Image 1: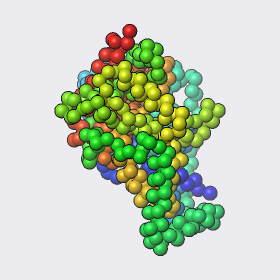
Image 2 (image 1 turned 90 degrees about the vertical axis):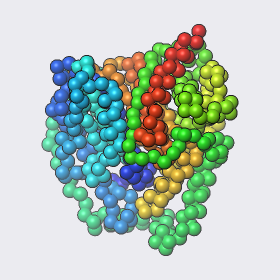
Image 3 (image 1 turned 30 degrees about the vertical axis):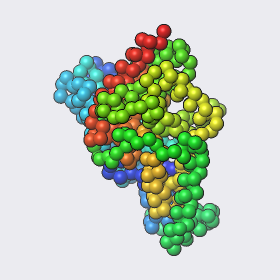
Image 4 (image 1 turned 180 degrees about the vertical axis):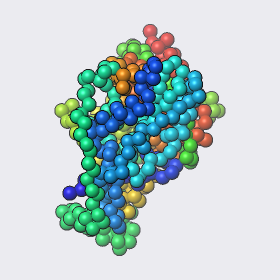
Length: 465
């Protein structure tokens, strides 16, 4: 029995086009004196840890005629050296050169004919440092409890004693099923789910009205789930524009203790403070561009948060809050109070877009119709929010990869069609690291926004007491 992609996972594949690759990235900066972690060592480390993430040796196989969602199969030609690659900067490599390389790597879509991940060792950074840049397709990371390849190579100590490598066992890929077997299993799925047969028949008959009615019903559910916020279109913003295939990447940093000090002085949560920082930076960025900013000006952010119970270790239970960031408010403390109040209200009143609703929006079967729904979802999202802001708390103790200590880590959040900026934040070892992924043309000044984020943190800390 083959393992089939879920509608949500398949939607990430169908959403992709050359302008909007959907992979999530990470930039790990490591101290590597005397070449502690070279390319050969990284390949060996990944090879030893691959049994912990078997999905990373599998690829996606389409079902003939698109009769059902694609399936996961072992890649008989899997080559770890293809996925773990080597790059270098002219010594001594600067941060600016590294970020330019990250932007170019991020812009390249993954090859869907191979396992959907890549890792690059970047040598030549000044100060005896190296970087590891990861690219992982969301379909590989199914749920909050899933393990990413970047996590697998990290240990709690330089010798990796706390996370022992699995025993070396020769991996023998299973033979992928043939076309007849794929079609037969698709038929069996339809027999077990009669509703899928009805949907397939409607699609085959070209019942566009039925398709449109269903999409409208789900979209209506999405609007109802987001309540008062979502029924209003997102504000017009320079953050929303047609995007191309090239990217820019910028970073910012903040002391976690400083963020906590601001939170302690003015209540709210760490996430509220970070959203306030982003709001203030966006305000100054808009003003620097000569954009009109008045008291009512706002920028709507989609903020994913976990709604999984502490006892539940499985499932992709994520809720995405739609919050209007008050960039028109000149007082930073009023901005913090308004954001804290809005976040509490959205959480308590359930005014959020649930993962199940988002899945249903693009979860039609068969995939030919499913692709249409996914693209419709992408078009709808442009009208609901201006940018995505993610914040993922990380470990507050040092981590190591092959004996090299990780000193910085930046998330790279993908762009969706029509949205020129995505902001990812993560805390690690006492510091909050911010990654800003932007369209190269429409947000050529994203580095200005990154600088403003650091300035906003400094201003809040200075005036907190």
